[in-house]
Amino acid sequence: MFCFVILLIGLVSEIKSQVSDDGVCPRVTTQNDFDVPRLMGVWYIQAHYPDGFGVAARCNKAEYTMLPNGTVIILNTKVMSNTGQQKSSISTLDPAGRGTDGKFSITFPVGPENPPPPYWVLETDYESYAVAWSCRSLKTTKNFMKHIRYIWLMTRTHNPPANLFRRMSNVVKKFNISFEDIERVDHANCF
Ligand SMILES: *[C@@H]1O[C@H](CO)[C@@H](O)[C@H](O)[C@H]1NC(C)=O
Ligand SMILES: *[C@@H]1O[C@H](CO)[C@@H](O)[C@H](O)[C@H]1NC(C)=O
Image 1 (cartoon, rainbow, N blue to C red):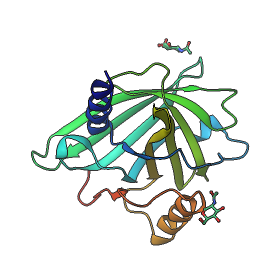
Image 2 (image 1 turned 90 degrees about the horizontal axis):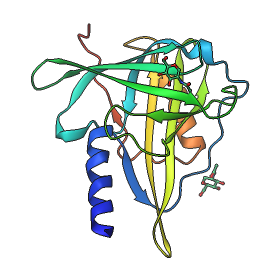
Image 3 (image 1 turned 45 degrees about the vertical axis):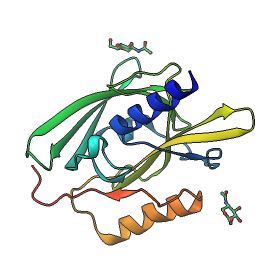
Image 4 (image 1 turned 120 degrees about the vertical axis):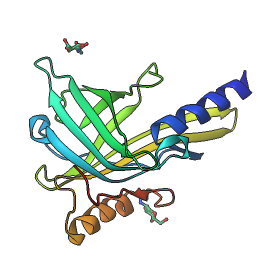
């Protein structure tokens, strides 16, 4: 059973650009007075944990749309580096509370989990950048904790100025989130 769980986590992590590590999640805070509608629209993913299957992708884009009941649909598209083929998938966010605390749960297209992992907006100005984060601490054995994390550094344009990268990096640093494994996404010659 234990082996199966580890194998499953490994497999899922391949699919969903997540990383797992020893210890518990770093302590983070979310964007003050978060305004859900202002997060809607197109975001370009500039950095995240690597895509799965060892196949690189580029031009990663996420389009956020809010439904009348408050559920947010994310249409993800990317171009596979090896074939040049465009791939898309849909994830959904549901507000964990009132939504104004920037805290949601996320359902990924592959391997839905129960309960769904968190999706927290750590910081955004809505108009140029956003840093979103997901982390769960899990007990693997009696005295051993691990955590599974995702991060998305997003901007409103394909090729943002360097100062936006610095702002996003500062968020990562502020919360002691490891830079290890965070990978830049290539946005050259995108659609
Ligand atoms: C919101 O509406 C969508 C589409 O009708 C539905 O799939 C989803 O389950 C609803 N979410 C909630 C939290 O009721
Ligand atoms: C980050 O790490 C530093 C040095 O280890 C520590 O002093 C600081 O309290 C940590 N900050 C957070 C938000 O965990």
